[in-house]
Length: 387
Image (tube, helix red, strand yellow):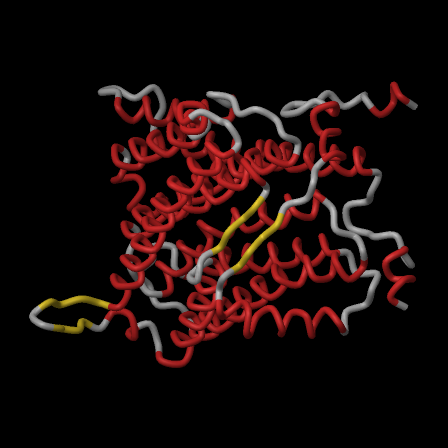
């Protein structure tokens, strides 16, 4: 059987590396959000109490992920240029789906605790799905508020940096700190904003207001607020991460160089989008955003797995290569490939890369921990104790 289990050659990790998940001490999340504490958490606890004990927490996480993918699909189908009106039911459904995602995202951990089925795989899956939602919510919000294709591209960078840094901070002591204004607030605002658009129409965001001689639209305000909040979180994240690294005896140089692959990818993405902007704004905005989101999620989940398995960071990862090629290609006077062909190749590559990477992590963790992905032992010890 030993020969049989090692027949699939690992692409990203060896099974020996993933086996280190067995000695993981488990991470702690401290959410300081008042919305979470007084509304979302009690509501999700109530919902979990009526959920059957055999429902696997990972199933809740994946269902939430499908909800975000559905909102993204609706955005692409009805608001490709991010300035078009969509039928009112589209806004309503998107609002409901984002709220459902947020609810399921908060139910999975409670269900895991209730059924005694908390695992590092569940933790990685939960945060991994959250990483996918960053680009999805920003692109969806830009489409619903009719901000145009430029704003989400600008907002995406700071939002991705803030999210990545939160997990980089956690790498040093397995402690995730969420501030007074965090993902819960972003998701509630997005959900209620979409629902408000369903009732009052998209002109809610596009009508010009003048305050003290300054004219603005609410859509612009939403994007600037997103950038501002993400920038503040980024600055705090850098300071806190360096503080944690020092406490662990990690040098400043080593801590900062861990961010090199992410920073290089971010710069390459910026260069590529800037130099191929005419293609970006000519109906391909969602393709660019999807590519950036897939690479960002890969790098974030990679950081989470490295933390859980206490694996060192590298200065470079092979899946970064296509984006670096796209950046260089866009700088050439005579590009090697047209932007349309580059987009197609990168889209296919990052879809396959994400699928293979996530499959390897899930199967590797399941094997190491001797668990199943979407089912839990029932009745289990924890359930028997509480019964």
